[in-house]
Amino acid sequence: MSRFRAVQGDQAAVGLEELGRAYFEFSQEFPAEYRVMFGRKKDFGEYPHLVEASGEAFFMLLCSVQALMPVGATQTQAVPNALLTWSMIHGYANLMQLGAFQFIDASVVPTPEGMAKSLAAAIGS
Image 1: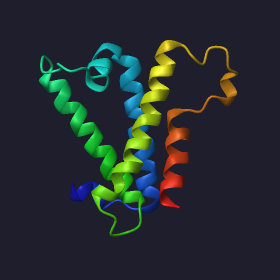
Image 2: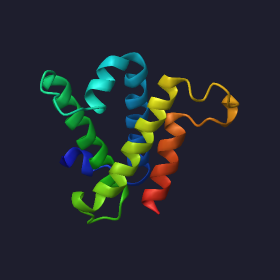
Image 3: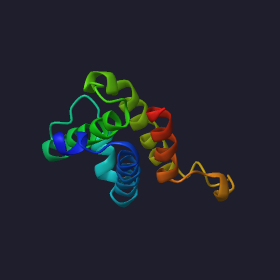
Image 4: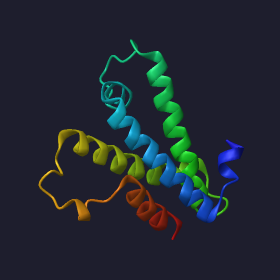
């Protein structure tokens, strides 16, 4: 965890943008695996490697969000912002998979990086 926590300020914001882009790209490139990892139902033990990867991805997100918060913020304090960030990027990825933005002018649909940048600014303020 220390390698994530060591990144502060603008570097942490860039890290969150990169993580958002990676989440989104994975969701588009591997939609079935993405649904298993992040759309869990009661019984997901059939795919333990994907469940483990899902947990690791959320932990990376949590550490990135914590790094944006004031120095001394705990992981527990970072959880609400991490869940907000997670919900937004996953909602965006799911809507893209469903084609929900097809009737919206592409110039106003945010990129995953743009969403992450906005969230990073809100978390860090």
